[in-house]
Length: 127
Image (cartoon, rainbow, N blue to C red):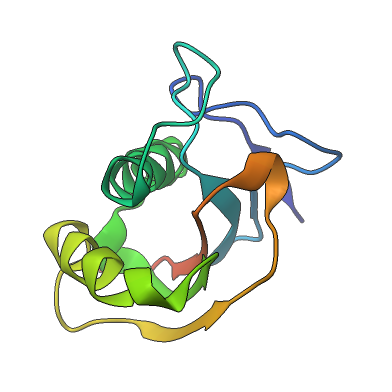
């Protein structure tokens, strides 16, 4: 059975998708870009957008009763691979070791001309 997750403190989806889908022990988080949920606008610059992406993902994880420590896979999309190191440093501020599996690549364009987008898969581990 799947359950749709909607975090009030994260921006609403900008298309026909859910913020996350909970499938029992696995939660699939849709990609987040650096939209400030209060203003509805993208933050400016790669660092500000990356921090906002993680804050948005954190809200969706909380709504799923999970945390970054439960993440097993992440996909990082960058508009410019020159931002790789900046995003990595910010990533480490939010995602604790042992780090999840991850892929990162440059794409030609993202929604609203975002500079970074990240999606995640998290798993519930029974105590």
